[in-house]
Amino acid sequence: MVFTRIIGWAQGVSPLSEVKTFRVSGWVSRGFRTLQLFKKVRALTVEEALEKFYSDVGSNHKVKRSQIKNVRVEEVREEA
Image: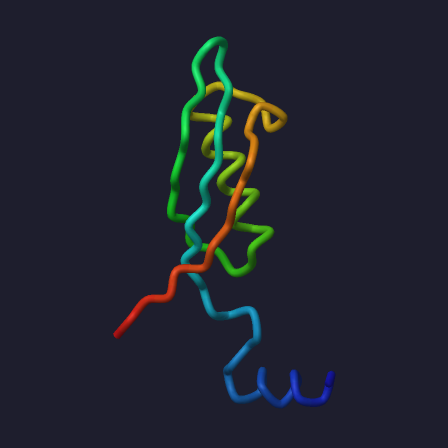
């Protein structure tokens, strides 16, 4: 496994070099209101996309990560 990765990097193809687009959605509770949010995020992995979503939503809506519920991550396939 390690050998194939080294060969791949030597050819200029890294397993993490492909940036993907993810559609992340979730619900935010703010007082008596509940907001449904959708965001397209470009990242290398699902974890990075989720981190970016939490960061952006917390920053824009002034909520903590614990107030964001039912988070769903889907990879968006871009058709050529």
